[in-house]
Picture 1: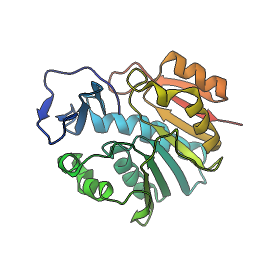
Picture 2: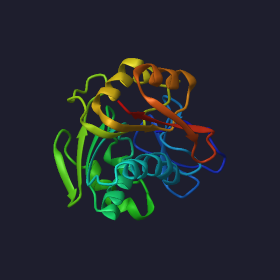
Picture 3: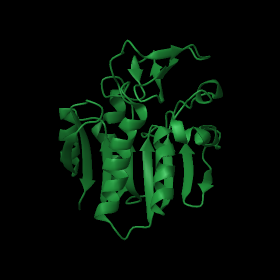
Length: 238
């Protein structure tokens, strides 16, 4: 869920939610504006294109390159949101014949009045399916993808150490929800990752990068998506 400036050509629709507005982004896919935070869930220039670049190409594709023998990947997502990252990961798992266990945290699930209007091109058919999955229960979406949604914040979530291969850190921006970006939460992410595990995010704020380094991550500052200047990939090498 990524902040962005409002663009004149955004198409907005009235929804049955006081704090959310549906928009159509530059690549034709949907996103949402949280009017309470004045923050977008994805780039207004292209929700699918952004998520494909940040989380699939720089996350999943990268991890598969550094661990070529891996046939089973465990992912933790911070911020289920519209479910777009999960939809793209479902497609990736199928195309790569790789088992994916996908867990996601979300404290404000979308109501049906909103998620039934989301449009994500070839992946739209699975939108309702993943949003309707019962919380706290593991669901087999297909033969290679399992989804578990947790109605919990990162602060309250507990998992054993060295459990995940990849973390998709897709929370609202540090300026809008600073607490989730606290070093204590990033330390939890570090502990949850296996050795050589990867954290990817759209964010490249200076303090965020300094916190990652202080915790023990090795970081790469990469070109950002959709005109954004930079993004970060962090790796737990020890």
